[in-house]
Structure formats: C-alpha cells, structure tokens
Image (cartoon, rainbow, N blue to C red; front, side):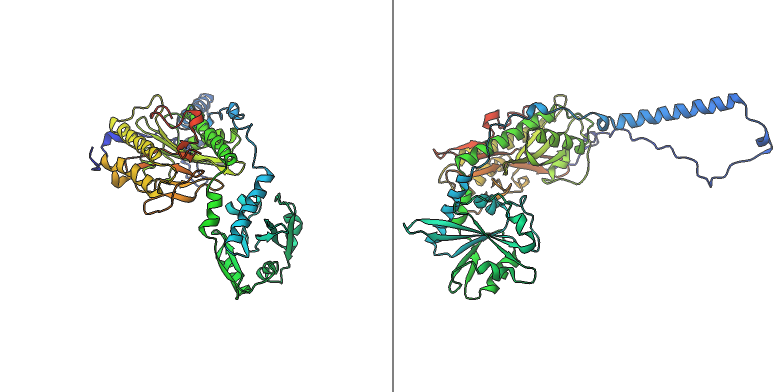
Length: 477
C-alpha cells in the first residue's frame, strides 16, 4: 500500500446543503418610483396578488431554512438510560488518602527531605483530595505542605498543613482534606510574604531539603527558595512521582467505569448522528450523552472527513457527507478520575471508500499490537515502536505524527508516556492510553483510542473491556 498522497478529485467533494437566501426589506432611503397613476386608488385584486406573492416567498424561505437547518431543530435525544452504569462506584475513601500521605511521608524520610509542597491539582488531589476544582489557582498561593514526622514508636507519619490567604481561611477550612492527625491551617495576611510564612512551619531551614511538585508554578518555587536561601528547593524526584503513577485497585475500578461510560455514550450518540449534520451538532449529542452517564467535566472533539487529519481539530464546522468517517475523541471525570476514548466510525448508511476502510484496519492492528507488547517490565518506548512498526510496514509511517499514548488518572495526560526515546519501565498499576493514528491532510484522519492498565499478573488489559471494547470495525465502535 502506497503512502503517496494524491489530489482530491471533484467526485470527492460533496455538495453542502442549500443555504437560505435572506429576504431583504426595502430600505427607507430606497427611491420609490412615481408616475401620474400613483394617485389612483389601488384595486383590491392587486392587494390580494401582492399578499399571495409575499406568502409564497415566505413559504420558499421557510422551506430553504428548514432543509438546511433541520438538524438544528431536532429535539435532543433522551439519554437517561445511560445514567445507572457507574452508580455502584464509590469515590476514594478517607483511609486511602491517609495511607497515601503516610507513603509520601516514608518516602520523604528515606530521602532525608524536610517537606513536600504542592498546589491544588493532580498531585495535591492524590495526596489530600485537593484538586483544581476545589480551589482555582490565582496569584495568591494556597499550598499543601507535607512533612514526615517520626513518632515515639519510630513510625513515620505525615504532618499535613495548608497555607492559605488570611481572608480565605474560613473557606480553606471547609476543604475536604482527610488527615489522621488533623490539618494545620496557616494564614498569611496580604502585607506578608506567603513563602516565609509557609517555611515557618519547618523546624529548621538550615540545609533543609524541600521538594516541590512538578506542576508547582515557577513563582512559587522561586519564592520558597528566596525565603530560605540556606535550604535546597528542587522538583520532586521519581520516587515521589511513582507513588501516584501506579494506580490502586480502587482507582482502577473508577477508571474502568469512567471509560466504559464514555464508550456507551459514543455508541448512543452515533445512533442519532445523520448525514448532513454539522460537527457542532454531533458534538452536542456526544456531550449530552456523556453528561447523562453521570460523568463531569466532559469534553468532545468531533471531526468529519478530512478535518480529522488535524488531530486536535480544524476550527471549522464541516457537514457530514456520505463518504466521510466520523472521529470523536471524548471523555469526562468520575470521582475526579478521567476517561479518554476515541472512535473513528461510519454510519449505517455511509459509503466509505475501500482505501479508507483499509486505513482503519491498519490503525486497529497497530492498537492491538501495542496492547500485546505492553506488560510489566517493558520499556515504554518499545510499546510506541511496536505500534509504529505496523503503520510503517503498511506504507503510512510518515502519517503517524504523535506519540502512542499517555498516562491517565487524576489528569487526562500524566506520566509516564508511551513515546519513543523514553526509558520509563512499565509496572503493575500503570494506566495508559493506546491511540495510534494515520493523518493524511486534506483527505482523511483515523485514530482509535482505548486506555489500558497493567494487572497484578503484569498483563495489559483494556479499561473498556467490560463493554466489549475496543472497536470491532468502522460500523461497530
């Protein structure tokens, strides 16, 4: 199969639905012709004819608008039957957060570190249930500070503190932060240095080693270093990152249901997508279906035909033609954990060219090869290479333009990544997206994405297997 890109023939271009021609009212400044007969009274027959003509023109306009915008006037389908799929899934319990905090404290102690600092986000959400949705970042820092403390029995425990703007202290105390020994809240007034206030919680700053989360903003890390010139402020090492990368059985169950619900939403929306519909209309369908499942923070990228050759969208609003694939990349959150699924599919009445169906099968084969390669102990770059080799051998290697996948959990994209050049090693509990694609600009884009996890036996399994995923064919997503 050749990778040569040919010019699109005229038969590949489908006509758009007719656009309505607006009826323009006469301007007040338009010249009205006059003659000697204008003073004569108008006959009733003339009035009737003009009235009938106006009615006829309005009817034509209504027909034109109706045919071009029929999809816009269609009622939103009822997706309520999707609601119960994840009703049995519980959020992470408090005792699990406390176990995470103690694991972090033990790791800090083993590294001779004084403290770990994070802002609201993925890592703070993992250790303290403090996500960006609980507290939006601003120029006034709110910080999670974790210190290792050794008790009288020699057991290392986590000491949890929150640095908060003084005028926000009451709201900060309402945050649902689990802690075995309670949370210490330290408020900083507007005319004080917040970083000096944060460091006052440490017993000593001389030779102190302070780790900041990798997502901490630069001005926060710099502020901590300036406030403690004798301390060492540095990014958290891999030992701390790994605590969050490897998912527990509780996390896996949430991720499974979130991704299963996303597949069910795609299938439900597909039943209502029609040829002649616009990308924005199909996008609204999938968002409605995702919300009906109970997922939050939903997103949907919907691309038709050649628009799918731009992996993150074209900015246009294309109409779906008979010969077009539909690409939907979508997801949402369940108890803070993300789903991410992509399907490229045809409608029952689509007529997809055989060469495009062949591309779909190549991408599908690459996705399956990646899953078979991923296992406990495998280097992540090898998985990317395995999928890429399938596409290269089919003659389309130059059109697979991005990495194979990313970690997924409390963030849609998180480490580790399935990418060439990486030396990260896959371990039990890791979760990844598996999303090969072929993108031939001006013609077609095909991507298939399912997320998988590494089970206790070290084997890769799809998070969406419970609903019969991955996709079986372009007509069975």
